[in-house]
Image (cartoon, rainbow over all chains, first blue to last red; front, side, top):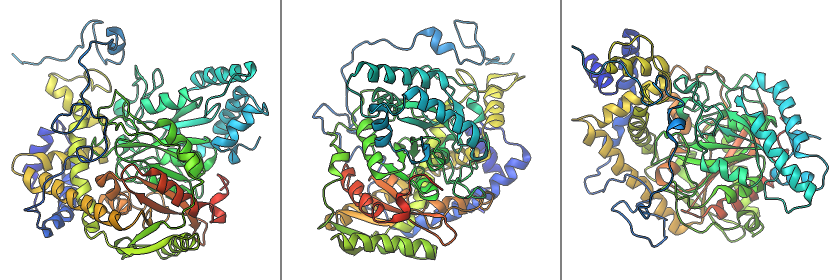
Length: 108
Length: 486
C-alpha cells in the first residue's frame, strides 16, 4: 500500500474535495491499484532523458514571430474589447449585480 | 430524403440543387432525433432556434443564387465540451448543469461560418474523462449498432449520432483516444489532427498538453473536408500552430502506391481480440494490394504509454478543474458557512466519481515529495515515447494499428474497474502524448456484426497522408462504405 488513509485525507484537502467516508475507502483502493500500475515506469532508466511538457515546444508553429522559452507565439500587446461585465456575471450562482457573492472568508 | 445515407458532400449538393431546403432538412433531422434519440441518448441539448436561423441564412443564399459555402446546410452536432454562446454547455457534468456560455468555441464558429448547421450538443463522459460514455452525469449513450453495448468514449454521443444518422457529422475531442476509440466502436470515421492543428479556444480544458478537437464522419472524405474548415492558426489559442492548411479533400485523390506503411509489433500482442486482429490484417493486405510497402517496425516504449498518460493527464486535469469553485459559474452547494466549506461541498456534490478519482490522482502526482517520482518521471517517458515515433517516421510514411484492442463492450462491463477501463485506450494514448495525428476508419465487422476500427498514425502536420491511407482501406472494405445504416 503506497497511499494511506492519511494521504487520501491530505490530498483531498489539497484538491478542495470533501469526500465521504465511503468515497475515501474506495479512493484508497483505486489509487493504490492505479499507482501500482504506474510504478512500471520505474523499469525505465530515464536519468539522461529530458522531460517533455508539451509538443508545441518541439514542433510546428513556424510563423517566424518572437517566441518565449516554451516557443509559444507572442502577440502585440494592444487593448481589445473583452466580455461585457453583465455577460460575465450572468452565470454567477450568487451576485449583487456588481460582484460575485461568497460566504464569509474569515470566521470571527 | 434518406437521412441515414447523407454525407457532407451529398447534403450540400442536395441543397445546392434545390432538392430540399436547409430549413426543411433541419426539421426532418429534429423529427428523427425526437423519434430515435431517446433510445440512444446521444443529444443532451438541442438548439432549434440557432439551427433554424442558420438554415434560413443558407436558404436565402440559395434563393439569391449566391455562391454557397463549403458546408452549406450540413446538419452537425458538437460534443458538449465545446462552448456555444447562448446554448447550455455541461461537459457531461452536474457542475455545469445550468451553464450558458457567453461565447463560442472557434471550431464550432468556423463550421458555422462555412455554412454548417448546429443541431445540438452531444453527450460525453464527464469532462471527457472515460472510455465508454458511462461517466456522463446525464446517463450513458447506447451504441446504435448494438444497444446493449457502449459507444466508446469519451466522445460517445458524437460517434453514436453519426452512426445513428441523427447528424451528418459531428465534432469530438481527443485527449487519450476519445475521438478514435468511439469512432471504432460505432463504425464511423474519427480524425485527430496534429496537436496545435485545430484551435482549442472554447474547448473546456481537460489536459491542455493533450487536448484536441476533431471531426467524426461517415466517410474519410467528409473528415478531410471538415478538417480543412476547422484547421489553422487562431489568435485566441496561443498553442494553435501557424502552419499552412492544404486542401485535404483534393489531396485524397493522390495514389497511395509507393508509400511505406509501418506495422508496429507492440500493437499486435497480448490482449488483442482475434477478430480485431484479422480485420486489421485484412486492411493491411488491402494497402499492400494498393501498392504500399508494408514494413514491420517497433515502437519499443508502447507498454509505458498508459501509465505515462494517466500521470500527465490527471496532473493537468487537477489544475484545470480547480476553476470549478462555485463562485463565478457552475454549481454552488447550499448552506455553506465559509468560503472554503463552499468550495469543498460544491465540488464534492457536483463532480462524479471518475472526475474525483482523476483529480485525486493528479493532485497526488503533483504534491510535494511525489512530483519527481511521478510527474517528472512521466514527462521523461513522454520524451521516449515521442522519440519512438521520430525514429519510426525516418523509415515509414505512416503507421497502421488496431484502434482499440476489442470491439464495443457491454454497458456495465468495465465500469467498476478503473484500470481495465483505462486499458481500452492502450492503442490510442501514445499519439496524444507524442502529438502525432491519427485517424480511425472502419475496416470490417465481427461475426456478430460489431464494427472494427483501423488506426493510421502519421508525421506531425502530415494529416494528408493518414487521410489518404485511411481512405485506401475504407474504400476497399465493402461494409465500411455503407454509410450510417446499422
